[in-house]
Figure (cartoon, rainbow, N blue to C red):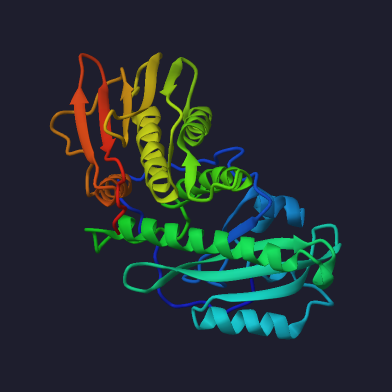
Length: 350
């Protein structure tokens, strides 16, 4: 992405109740590199880069995050291509360019780059996303157009999903803004990247309209347990294989991420052992049932949950409402359990 002047609005306020964010190792194994930048910070720096971007460029995360994307440019980078990028970013427009970039070792590579604004419900640009892939044979790559079509598909999906999440983060709380250190979005982006990997597997089987939900949820739960877990805390999974639409998979996956992360982070305070369970099954009338439970300290009866005062609470409420689903919070002799039903043929609403 190009050098661009910073915008003046600042979004530094953190949402109350946002859990600490950590990297989900192995979430970004796809070949499509992705970065996100924040134009509301000085010099529009990178705030997120996936593993594919690290592999493509050879730069470490610490050498990427916090810098403007111009560090990839070099002596033979076409100034006209840079100007096209800069102009589109200044106008908050989508843009596609082939641009010569340079890796950490100095090697040049031709980069097919698509840059798009990520906007909130009011049409304000909160982030820019850059989706890119190296053209192995430069501009003469015979697969360049196929690469472009694939990148456009990913770009459209990411742009739509992240705009949805930003809107949910801001919903019912005009005082809360998207934090410019990416804390409120980072884990959600990594959850979506894992879904995009499953979509790629579906494409290989000529099934572009459905996702293997059992595989997606199993991998997602395992990644969260690995990242958020600690000695003494166990996790059991009982997950049936079933297929759902991409839109349903997106929202259910984000719900799973919120519920499991909340359980691992808060259910076992001052406890040395504990159990988290996740179950997913198909309802007899179609649709699916998701249950996340723990045997920890439990959610206090005096606490509103999900709470519209927290980022996670707003996301869960927005996702369930969009699925036309139901959520029930139960409290057992120990711990809590959350049951979510998604009806068959759920028509996802925005």
